[in-house]
Amino acid sequence: MEKLIAGIHRFQNDVFAPRRDFFRHLVNGQRPRALFVTCSDSRMVPDLICQTDPGDLFVLRNAGNIVPPYTPGAPSGEAATIEYAIKGLDIRNVVVCGHTCCGAMQAVLDPEATANMPRVRQWLGNADAAGEIVCTCYQHLSAEARWAVTVQENVLVQVEHLRTHPVVAAGLAAGELRLHAWVYKMETGQVFAYDPAAGQFLPLDRASAGGAITPAHRRAFGELPPLHAPAGRTTAV
Image (cartoon, rainbow, N blue to C red; front, side):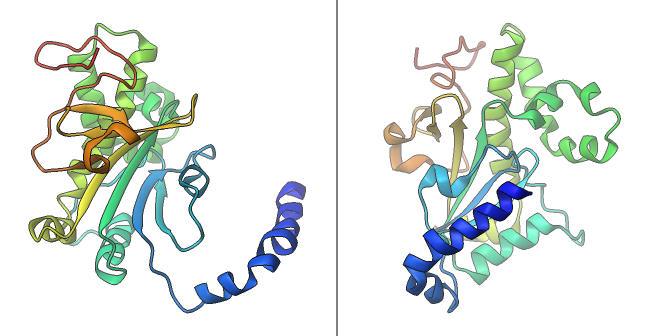
């Protein structure tokens, strides 16, 4: 707690005070540039990675950067946040950003790891499709490589879940909304975006249209990490 309290004092003196007018302007309202769905992992810091200011990102965080499929009549903090971001804040870009070394994705591959955490196990059921894909298509890979691929597959699964939400479906149909699938590589600081034209994750600066994806995308992985794809999938290497 001492580190947190000392940090608050530094923020007030070294950050807030020199930019007092900027922070006071934020009181008038927010106009974030994107909804950023990411993991609760303490090593994931969206504003640090994107070098954004307060007010730039509307952030939705949970274990595994998960977006449960829309369920009519079922209360959901994720559904409410997504709806408010798009309809209330007029956000036009939604990013789902996973990260390497994700403990939630490791637990998806090894359900016994959360055997004594029933609520965590239930929550990670929203990522079961990613685990099933990896177990079906990537058995030839090492455990470490399957973990990395699960992170990628999960991001794409959650983007598919996003499309089930009425406000997202409407925004896509009207051509007013863009979805982005990203993975932050913790080991190098790189961000990879799923490029639908290439059918794989590419470094963000090489992904076409900033990695915006369409309803008809094809999964394949080449550069994060370089993999030997199973039959029916292609790689860049």
